[in-house]
Amino acid sequence: MYKKHDYVEIELCVLTKDERAAQVPKDTKEVPLMLRTKGFLLEDGRINEEVSIMTATKRIVKGTLVEGNPFYKHTFGGFVYETQQIRSIIEAEAGNLDE
Amino acid sequence: MSKTYLDVMKRRSKIILDSLQFDYSRYEDKDGIGFDYEQMMKDTGFTLEDVKRIQLENRVGNTPLVELRNLTKYARKFAEKGYGARIFLKDEADNLSGSFKARRAAISVYQAKKLGYKGVIAATSGNYGAAVAAMAARLGLRCIIVQECYDSNQIGQPEIIEKARACEAYGAEVVRLTVGPELFYQFLLLLEETGYFNASLYSPYGIQGIETLGEEIATEVLKKYNKYPEVVVCTNAGGGNLTGTARGLINAGAKDTKIIAASVDLTGLHMASDTDFNRKSFTTGHTGFGIPFTTFPDRSDVPRSAGRPLRYLDKYLTINQGSVFFITEALARLEGMERGPAGNVSLAIAFKLSQKMKEDELIVVQESEYTGAGKHMNAQLDFAKKRGIKLLFGNPMTEIPGENIIFPASAKEIDYKEIPLDQLRKSYLRHYKNQKLTDKDIQYLALELKTDFKTVEKLREEEDESTSR
Image (cartoon, rainbow over all chains, first blue to last red):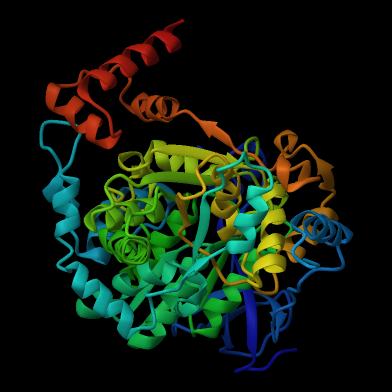
């Protein structure tokens, strides 16, 4: 349960499958065009409930509550051995280390 | 007012006019296909001096031009004696918000403020979002950035997620959409709802802002080396970067400098496909934008794009994803400059070009961009690997975008492919196929395609023959 004034992310459907533009490729046409935005709850709400929020630009937007207290989870990724291999090639070829 | 897709698209001209207060109809040739491009560029109301002043007041422009001595030395190992041009990098990561896009945003957002708008909106998944958001923060305007960010499983491109974070850091609202060109429809709806200014990448303001970049390169190189650079390489997507840089170079007197368009090769991946969306490791600077926007600039979010690369470019070269990652690592390891991979597309091409040019010649790579979580080569490669894309070493020319990423087993293997200019010109001309054109139309096309009247006629004939066969 999230309270009024909590910061959340909502999702809404912009275009259903049937409403999508004619030029869209087949795989994209099989899914709706969805939108997400963040803001402060204008009322209490639970995940998957319809709620209204006020966004950073003071717009009031209605949608399904999908996440409370949303924050960034992106990272530098996990260890990728190949990047070390690239480095080894460069070090061996450029050879400016031991001159 | 109706909000259905078709009804909103029908109102697009009115929405764009209200949100830019720039009347494109003034420049249209009333009885032909052309328009007065140069007059449109003049009518921004800003001189080059105004643009420079606005940019400098806002921590934009005057970025360092760095000679990449170690990278040049590396390239020369694979060049014949006397070859291996000196490579320079215009370190645009040094701008407010970390990319050259700050130059474009500075003028667009300034104009919005001048006209009394309360806010700005831009449709972009790239660095332009952060650039507009940062400038809006400085000028006290509200800002909405509309991004294509996720596939239908709500999996976002790491690079785009990081850009959303940067926009939010500057106070913008980021409206994130799943894949599809109807993003433009949502963009129009937001313009209508808010009455904000359309900070389009393709307006004359968006392009005029980059002219300072070309001007700075020409002036600094002339002062230090007593000549203009032989070659400037521009990463090409929507065409504005190349157009603005070329215009700036020409205005400053560097009329013989060759302008090279550089894109990372994503042939085979459909840009509007939900399934292909997360199979690319570059979300900008690629052929998926570069080719369509070069061969049909007016597909953008304004009636006439101010970015018109075929008017300026001398060669169009492409390179594979693996080589760009390789050179990104080399830039960090040999020059101590850690920069985002997408900005290094032109650098990877310059590395090979250098080997074909004389050692006293100068190549300028005209941009770099910031790097960070998400928009970092390791993040991109890990993301690709987790989607089953194979990371291999071998001949980079055999890479299949979306299936594998092939790193060169030696920097010697880094090479580009050339798209013949006439092929691009013919694609452009296809839009006027079977249309009766006047001499005036052909003259306009000659300007658009940087060629002459006769060549336009010849290419049109060849195009008609090849498709009627």
